[in-house]
Image (cartoon, rainbow, N blue to C red; front, top):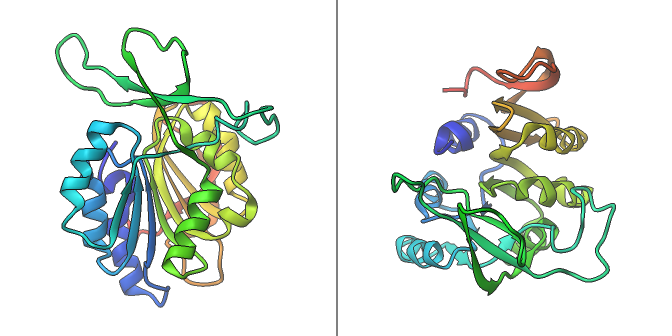
Length: 262
C-alpha cells in the first residue's frame, strides 16, 4: 500500500481548505524510505515543517538528496519504536535495561524483485533468509519523544499529521504512547501489519480518535482523527457491521465523509 490511497494527504488537504479547521503546520513521517512520499506530503502542505525518520543508511542518504530542495524538511537516521524499552505493545512489561536494536534489511526475492519491508528487531535475532542484519546499532526514539521534540522545534502544541510506514513497529510505538501524546496528534495515517495484533491498538486509539481501517488481516491501512467539536474528516457516527475482507470478526469504526473521500 502506498501513496494517497493509504495515507490520504490529498484528501486531508482538500478537507482543510474546505473547512475552518486549523492549517497543517507540523508533520512527522515514520519510515522515509527514499523520500518520495515525504516530497508529496510537503508539496501538499508547503508551509508545514516535516521531520522524517529512516533507519536504513542507503535509503537515508537517497532521501536526504531528494528532500534537500525542501528547507522545511529534516531527515533523521533513527527508528521510532518502543521495542527497545518494552517486551509488549502496551508498555506493561518494561525491560530492565534498553536492548540493542538493529535494522534487518529486506533482501530482493529469487526473481530480483525488492519487496521492501525492512524491520527493526533485537540484535542477533534470526529473521530468516529474507533479511540481512545490519551491524550498526539503531538510535531508537519513542513516539512520546519525537512528538514532544517536534512540537518544541515548531513552537506548537499539536502535531497536525503523522504518516507511518513502520513494518510492524506501529503496534508498539502507538500502544506504548501516553494518552497525552496521542491527544496532541490531530491526524495519523499509515499501514498496519497483522490485524489481530493491531486491533487492540486501534481500540486504544478509539479513546481519543475517530478510527478508520481498511484492508486484509495481514496488511491494511489506518486513519485516525482526533475527536473535537469541529467539522470532522471522518464520520463521527460509528459503523458496526463492517468486517475486513477475509476477516470474519465484525467491529466498529468510522467511515470517511464522502465529501472528501475522493
